[in-house]
Length: 159
Image (cartoon, rainbow, N blue to C red):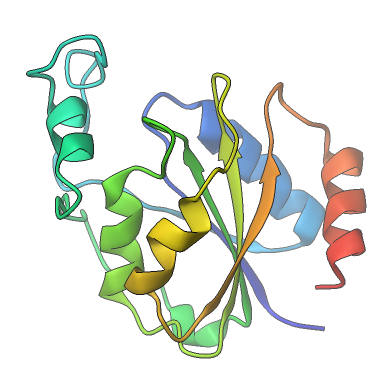
């Protein structure tokens, strides 16, 4: 049995709630990916072309700074990595997180919350940030899935 971590970024709390339930279901440790400068409601206004999140997502090389880099990734075999889908991709802070650690030989299973889009090419977009990890598309977890539902999913993955 591998040691598991649920690492997540959540700007509004939706992904955080799902990540906490997933960590319980997977019997995994929990780690919040936090930006050095927290996002405000104004920063997240995707309809405003001058909003922070809009600027970051338009610039593929954007790497928002992390509040810390104290996740002990070396301890884990499997990392469930969660985030809200922004502009059909992972927020660029996920690339920052992946580039801050050595994920060599790790299995990274993605999960996301979304207002309507699926994973699309998210795996391909994240793989260069953790080239020696196995990144796999997991599930879109909307609607506050229950612990038994998430436990069943984790068991189906064999991790």
